[in-house]
Length: 70
Image 1 (tube, rainbow, N blue to C red):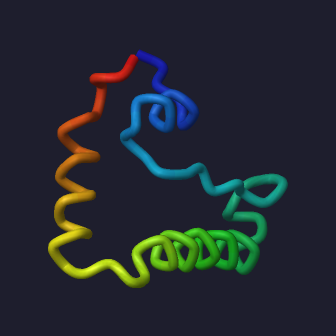
Image 2 (cartoon, rainbow, N blue to C red):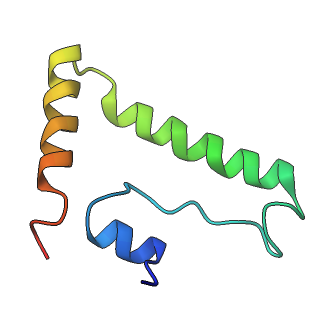
């Protein structure tokens, strides 16, 4: 099936691709953890100021639209 991270981004299934350190996450766990933390912080920043219902509507719309805009 060969589904790549780029495919998942294009299909709207994932929001972002987190780059691994050179050699893979197992070679430099602190760098991998830092990259993941930065991506999570950025995702949470996008939600700042939204109320619970707005977040729920946004997530629902995201999941309902998966695969519809190919």
